[in-house]
Image (cartoon, rainbow, N blue to C red; front, side, top):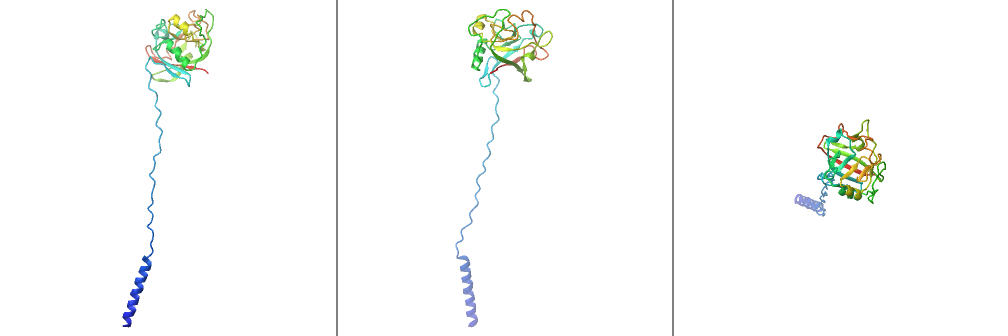
Length: 234
């Protein structure tokens, strides 16, 4: 009887211990939550503007540039002319080193839109020996396979070297319209060219002082389209 009592007491003690161990309400462990990773936003690559149609004029007022397309006339690799860039349908379109697809009057408007200040605005004519003036302009060329701009002075040659270049926004909106020549860039001072070269007086190149040619060792072949960029100096 005594053994049974001891055994019963031991069983009660075990039950008490088990109840004590399992009686506490332990909170379930919190599940670790991880925030979904956010993918870093990557900047989309800048897309370059598609080339303009040949007759289009591209104006960048912030950069002060006007860009047009013209076609090389190989006649002037060995024939001197004062006409550098002329509207192809203008009166001097076939007398220029490069025939532009855009109208010279539209080019004038684009130069003003780009921030240019025309010099001659009253239709005045220059006489032989007189010089143009106005805002300075840099002129350069690129073409397929030539992405590094070629400066105007490097695109031309004289009988003994390179011509002097000091291009200006001559203006000449009225003179240009009156002449009907379509002149966009003349290589000496001119009353009809929207831009012209103050390094030489009006009539200088036609008088052979100096002779100026398109340099065939630099510029592309006859019939090649080139991009011509006029940059206003501010």
